[in-house]
Amino acid sequence: MVEISSLNNHYLSFCAKKNNFSSCFKCKESILSKNYEKHLKENSCMSGKNNNYYNRCPLCHSDHTPSGVLGWQMHLLEDGCPLNPRNII
View (cartoon, helix red, strand yellow):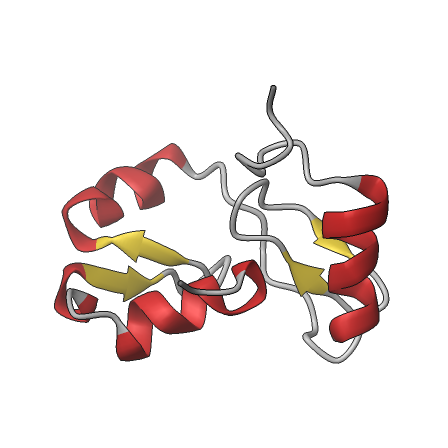
C-alpha cells in the first residue's frame, strides 16, 4: 500500500517494477516507459511547478497548495480528488 502523495516517487524508486517507469522532464510525473514517447508527443502535460509551494496529484495531475501534508489533506480529504477511486461511487 502506497500513499497517493508518494506514488510518483514509489514508481520511480521503490516499486518492484521501477524499471518500467520514467520521469517526464517537463511535468516531473512518473510515466510508464512504454508510453513515454506518446506522452511527450501529446504535449498535454503541465510543466512541474516548484515543490516548495505546490503538490502535484498523480491521480488528477492538478497542482494544489499549500505544499506538504496540509495540502495533501485538503486535496484528498476536504476537497476530494475527482480521480481518487475511493471517492468515485
